[in-house]
Image 1 (cartoon, rainbow, N blue to C red):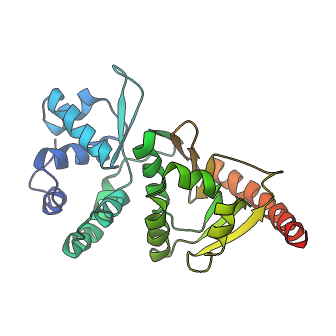
Image 2: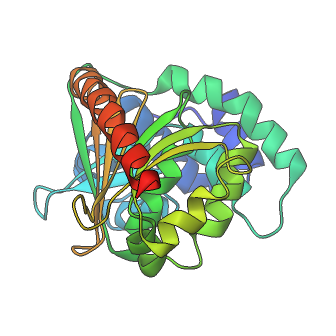
Length: 261
């Protein structure tokens, strides 16, 4: 059962979490992936109420859901997402940000993570934004295959602020980009947006889904299907990083030929 006298629980309340929401979130951190029945029992809250609370946590990007009833399962995202949530609020509260920065390491100590690879699915416009929000937790340079034209068409109001936030966080990106008008314009801002790019001929190499590789994750954003996927696996991410290295060398060769035409 959740201890409502614990400093971590009180820390979430101080960040503005409703009491029952804080209890469910902490229960899920400790349990790992679980069904509503198990979560409700651990949080000592009735099952019907827990559904509403979980929907709220999913909307905030703090919890991910997979499967369909009656086999639906929920899993807590990294506590780093709390910082992302506060940073994207319209009215930034520096006091809350500082509180969150102090609390997140404690929440991580509770987070039940196994070595088993995880695959998380996100759907619709909100889901597509959520997978990009996860890239803002990266501790290393993001390696990307990115079609800027497709990205901006799908989420026109999201990306200008995303670029600014990524740059402000000091997260660099290395991107292979088809040489369409939107791509060329984006590359012209590489220095300001902490990016190194390689433009490849659009008529020969065109890809729509974006792929980002960072830390132990691979993010795939399918614009046509409005589907975001995050694969969390050290083995898969390392393999994708190796493949990107080969792709990057060829992309730079193609870019050189493109500039000579």
